[in-house]
Image (tube, rainbow, N blue to C red; front, side, top):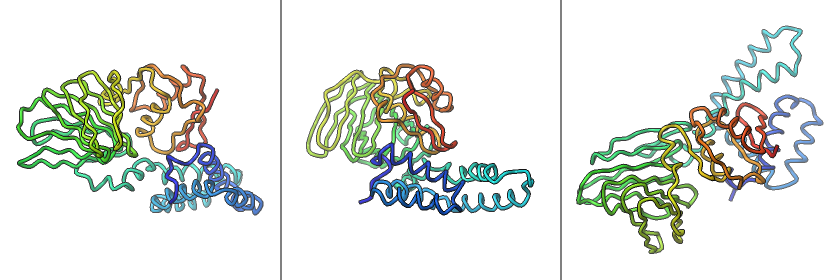
Length: 322
């Protein structure tokens, strides 16, 4: 099985990106290709990182073709004084267009577009449900709705939602993930749920809910509590996080949030790759960060923490130790 992008190391992805840029600029030089081949052959993870980038490019072949046509025009019209390196840098900017949909492609590749409700990169959406409840979908989220005479079921395939309900209805209201089901015990109700890669995080702001795990685990979660759960069990409750609902207002409020979690959230609101050096993953972050201007959010992090923002291209950004 090929590693997913989330399981590839920070170093392998960074090296693959650097080779991508270098080959784009100097790919007609035999020595560069030989050096790239040597790196590629060294380790299976290098090959996986490179193939990941190739798959991303293949998904956007039509956009890349447009960039290549524009590139030919650029070369034809370029002044003789324009050096080859500058021309190639201009072509790199054109290539960014083919990579800009990376986040959206990741969602689509997991069948997100076949869901009843879905969002792409950087997109929040408010939905009025058939029973009068309100559901907010965060970026890169897919939800199926199944309301019938017996139940009101919301199936969260992946992503993040906030559910608010004041509806009195005999039919059970259930928010389901592959890790388990969250059944609402009473209204009024306001809860947030994020699910990804087999793990779910539930914040309960109003009302009481019951978690029904895939292996038979049951747990009640009271207002003001937060729990994480998988198919195997439920964590002890902790205080609910404001971050679970602040994204509805295009702001993410961090309360001693690990930097890795914040970068993961920001990454769903910008196109391309947003990476983090593993050494910085557990840094605690406090503050409010704009989701509709992630570059500003990164500048705030750079000013507050011992980190620096490294931009290899407009679509490949990482946070490194300062």
